[in-house]
Structure formats: C-alpha cells, structure tokens
Image (cartoon, rainbow over all chains, first blue to last red; front, side, top):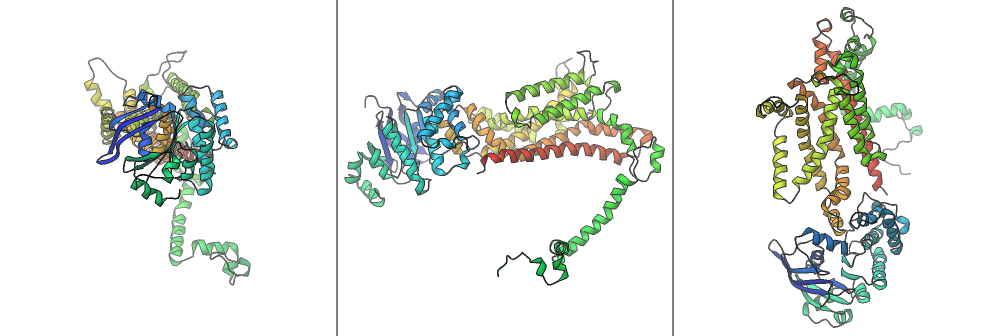
Length: 246
Length: 367
C-alpha cells in the first residue's frame, strides 16, 4: 500500500519461549476502520500494543506514518503523540479530575496553553455527552462514563490513529451500548483511522471496512464485514463464528 | 416480634441490672463473661495502684516555686523547680545566654515552615521557596556573623534548636534523595540500578551510630592534610544518607503498588519518563505510603539524639548536662520527663498531622 498509515512487515514477537505473534503482515490505509477479532490468547491485543510500543516486537518492522518503531525513545514518543489508545480497564488517573485527565496530555506533551486545552477538553466531553461530569473524579463515575472519558482523553491529543483494546469487555451490558454509540459516531463523523479489538460483532458490521480474524498469533483471514460473516473461507474462522453471536 | 440479637428493650427488661442504662452498660461491656470480669478487676487494681500515686507525685505534692535544691528535696512530690531553673540550658544548650533569642527564633522558623508544608494551598513551587528561605534564615540566625549578629560557632549550638535543625534538614534532603534512589532501583539501566541497590543495602546494614562514628572519626583520616569538614555538617550528612536509604525502600513499596495500567495510560499520551513520575505515578505512590513515611520521619527525629555519641549537644545531651550540676543532682526523673514530653509533642503532632493528611487526600476518591 503506497501511503499506509500503519505498516507491519513480518512482525514476530515472543514472550520468553511462547511465540505470540507469527509473521504478521498488515497495512492500514488512512481513514480505514479495522476490527480485529479472535479467541483469547490469539495475540490481538499484543498486535495493537506493538503499534504504540507498549509491547516490543523482536523481529520485523513496524512503521507508523512513515516513522519506524525502534528503541529510539524520541521516535516512540513522536508516534505516541499521534496514536491514541483506549484500554479495557480505562486507565484514567484517579487523583485528577476528569477535566485534568483530559488536559494533562495537551498541556505537557503538546505544550498547549491551559485555557485552550480546557476549551478543547470541554468540546470533546460534550461530544461524548459527559460534559457535566468535568469536575468529578473518575472514581465517582460509572464504567461507561469512565470509558467515554477515556475516549475523550485520547481525542484531546488530536491523534491520527485510535487504537481500542477491548473497550467494552469490562462494562456491564447496559453501558456497552453508550460506549459503542460514541465509537460509531467517531467513525461516522470523523475520518479517524481506527483499529478496534472487540467481540462486538454488531459494531463490526456497522462500522468496519475490514474484519481481521487472528488465531494463535497469526492472521487467518481478513475481509469486508459482509463477506467475513456471511462467507467465511477458513475452517478456523468458521469454527470461531459458529461459537459467537454475530 | 423479632429483635436484633444484641438489642435490649431496656424499659421492659426483667432485672434491675438490665433496666438502668449505666448498670446495663457495665454488665455488657465490663462484666459480660468470667474472663472479662477478671480482666476488668485486674485493670481496676492496676489503675488504683498506680494512678493516685502518679497524680500525687506529678501534681499534688510537687513544687514549681522552690528556689533551691534543699527546698526541693523537702518536697515529697516532683520538683518541677529544677525545670524552671534549668530550662534554658536544656532547651538551648551552651549557646550564649544573651543571644538565645536567636535559636528560639530559628526554632520557630523551622516549625513554621513545617506547618506551612501541610497547608494544601501552598503545594506548589512557592513551598520550595519557603523551605529555602526558612533553612537559610535558620542558618543565618544560628551562625550570625552578618547583619550585625555576633558569630556563634556551631560547637556552642545545642538543645532543641539543634535537634530540630538536624531532623528538619535531614528530612528535607533525605526525602528527595530517597525518591531518586527508589526510582533508580526500579530503573532498567543496570549501572544506575546497581549503584542504588549497593547504596541502600550498605546503609541499611549498619546502625546510625556507626555511620556517625565513621563520619566523626574515620572520614577525617581520609581527607587530605589541612582539609577539615565541620563536624556538625558531617553528622548532618550521615543522618541524611541514613534516612534516605530507608525512605527509598518505603517509596519503592508505594511505586510497586501502582497498577501497570497507570504507566500505560501515561505512555499512551506520550508523556516522558519524568513527566509520568511527577504528574501521575509519584503523587499516587506517595499518598499510599504516607503512614510508613511519616513513621520514618518520627523515628528520624528521635534518632538525632544519637549524636551525643560524637559529642554534639542535642536535646538529650543538654538534659544530661543539666544533671551534672552538683547542687541539683538527683532530679533526673523530672528532667527526663520534661524532654520526653518535648519529644512526644513533636512526634505526636507529626503523627496527628499524617492522619489528617490521609483523610484529606482520601476524600478525592470517594463517591
């Protein structure tokens, strides 16, 4: 792909002896929405965590916006400014208010003046429909509210790519919908490149440009949502799909 | 109707004992079982054996106004007059008599800056400025030599101001050093990690007394001819190095308690290592270890009394000096009670403050 925003070539990773990523080749175009699914232990979270260097790959090349990820911390920090991440367990900072959580990155990393950072934060809090909670602490919010704050926090950094690591897996079913709605709006209203690891297949059908199935560290199959769900090619894919509601 | 097991409807209860509230309380709290009854009687006996005698000695038969030692010996209770007579020596050591307002002012300055550090409003860069001003102010007051104050060499410093200076400077410098050591021990860089581990384990392996001895006796042997470092400064550095090792391990415990997700959240925003530590990790880690950390501060305050071993006149040594006076010999209990009370006031204040600090910081997280 000529101007892929993320490019992974022959990426391999081991945890000790365990081969968690095997010869991953993936190109993501700008603005593309990719859903990665698979059984647990298949390496899907590890794959996206390698993109912002939360995990280190031992072999192969990963580059984001043309910058290759290596041990050079400056490259890594530059990449992290442009890649936002939303975690399964939110990872909000409990000792700061919601507003402070959001303005921390822009003020200290992007060197935005405080007033401008706060205005931007309120704009994104409005967008995820949680503006009235700006002065509360994360511990005072419900899970769905916390995850929406986490999404807003990543958006405040104006990233080019958003990574979602099972964003709704730790939420009660009633709250899953409110978070998915925010993600769908994000996909529809902006041209954000999104890589989402999730089990929410309804979301995949609605929003994804491509669905990738991983098992035991390998990419088994990737296709458009309709083709993927209605006409799976590989036997392992068929087995997986038969076990989940889609 | 059903009633909770421990509730008693007092007005309709069967016996006299259960009907009158006080008697009921006595029965359930103090005499509820044979063992409890025995313990209650034992405690009462102990209290009766000791408290009246103590109250008698401390207050009823004691004297504050006796003017000489003979008068005091005639009194059966405590002779607090010895405190009245000797308090300047105990509190200020052998500092020149007319200049003792200076150590008093220095003491108040140090206490003020410590109290100020507890006020939330000042928790920013201005606190650093206050500390620098207070520490230099205290040093200028004690030493003199400028601003028209007569010079008083530090071998004449003593008593409470010296104890306070040793502890305050000690904590002020050991705390940041402890943070650096704790971070260094967790570092991925092998050289830094090894240095920190070696330092911490070496220092923790020796008692403070031996460090003080080494600073007073051994270090001068290693210094080149003619170069002398002030003995008080050496003792102060020894105290700082000693405390930093223990604080480092306590702080490292706090750092270990921070979930990995906090580091990852900070990483994902692109924060640098020092930004992460300063903004995210250390505020949370230090809050967790307030109880053991304040415990270390309290222990450090009392450990400064060990400098008597190298001939520095702290509060404990000043108390012993007061006892040397032949005319007032024999009143050691009163004097030690006095300095124990001083130590207790400071240590208990630190402890109470840490409890209130914890409570204040915890309200942030409550629903």
